[in-house]
Length: 281
Image 1 (cartoon, rainbow, N blue to C red):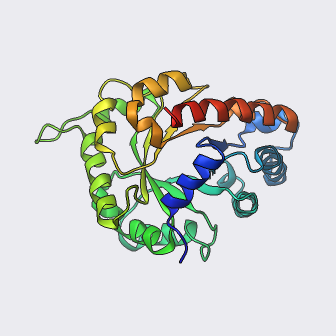
Image 2 (cartoon, helix red, strand yellow; image 1 turned 120 degrees about the vertical axis):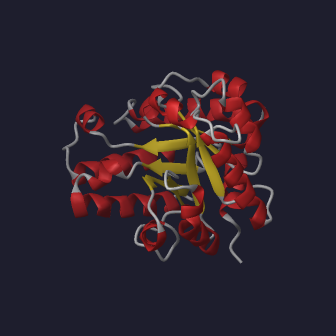
């Protein structure tokens, strides 16, 4: 039987690094790298990143938007890079933040998750604006295929705070209530760390401590280091004991060093060291 997503991720994070390298082939980066702003440019960009990342990281996060904008050819490159990630022994997290209800959300899961899906991802990001209960179809898909889901709980952008800190009738913030739902679902799976992770911005502070304390059974995808102002040290301080389940995510801070494979590798090595310091406490 194939081990669960959480078990595979935990083993890879300990052996390689908990660092999550984001692949964001934006117009600015493609131009900076001297590549055409096209699907073919995206393909060359991804191949270079994966050559540099090799077997150094546990998980790689392609941002679907930068592929989708080039239509079918761009989406083909998303398929290709997921295959490259798998070939390097890492896990792929397709950052698409899908959300809907019923069979529509089920179809998103069928598109993104599992070896029999169109894109073959090991995990995907979702948002929960329709309510955590509406995520049931994609959560079921994740469990059935041994994949993971990362729910946006607290984002790294300042605009999200007003909604995430809004309070329900029982006094909990929306973020805290969502964290409770994530933890309750993972408890039903019966593993120490379940298949549902949480996106918790590395820049989070204040109310975030209470939210983190509720996410006792989740990996925590932590974007925001570097370009958005967080450091490994500040993240370790704000995450506390939860930092040992954190996956610091860096995109621009690494990708800006390209197109030199050597420079990218050096940036990845520095980030790996920082991520290990957080992971090991």
